[in-house]
Image (cartoon, rainbow, N blue to C red; front, side, top):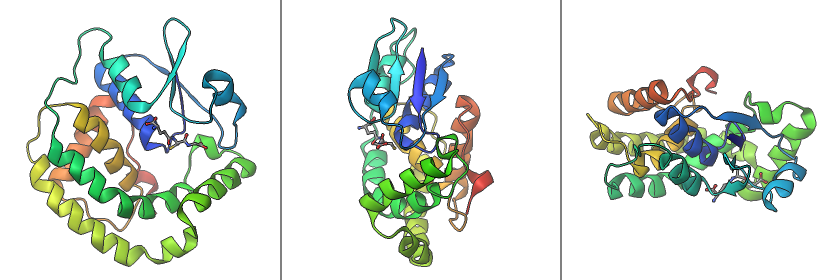
Length: 210
Ligand SMILES: N[C@@H](CCC(=O)N[C@@H](CS)C(=O)NCC(=O)O)C(=O)O
C-alpha cells in the first residue's frame, strides 16, 4: 500500500496516524504542491491524501482511509466517539488555521522542495485565507486566543487512554499547532501529543516551530 501525502497536511496526518498506531507498514509518497497531474490521474481530482490499496485501486477522503486501514487486521479505533473533543476541534479550527497555515507556507516540507512548489502552495493558501503576512502580524492576538483553548482542552486529555476516531481528528490539529512557536501547550496536552507521536512514529513539528 502507498499513501500520497503532503507532509504538512492535517488530513494526510489522519491516515498516517492510523497506520502508525496500527503498525501497518505504509510507503508514503510526497507529491509536490502544484502537481495536479498525479492526483487527477489517480482519483480524478486534485486532493491528498490518496491511498493506493493492496489491490492497486485508489481511495480518497482521510476518514474513509483511516477506517479502511483500521479494518485491516484487528481494529484499534474502538474507543467511543468523544463529542467534546470533536467540538473542541471545530471551535479551535478557525483560529488554528490562521496560526499554522502561514507558517506551513514557510516550513521545511518535501512538498515545497522547489521554489515553484512553494509559490504554488503560498498562492493556494492566500486564495483561501487572504494576506498571509497580515495573519503573521496578528500572531499575538491569535496566540492569546489559542492558548485559552488549549487550557480548556487540558482537562479533557488528562490521563486519556482510549483511542478512537476522535483522536484521529484531534491529534493532527495539535500536530499542526506544534509549528507555532509562541503557543503554550499545557502539560497534559503536550503529554498526549507526544504519546501519540511516539506510538505512531508520525513526527510533531516543535523542531521547526516559528
Ligand atoms: N475531505 C478531504 C480534504 C483533504 C484536503 O483538503 N486536502 C488538501 C491538502 S491539506 C488538498 O489536497 N487540497 C487541494 C490541493 O492541494 O490543491 C479529506 O478529509 O481527505
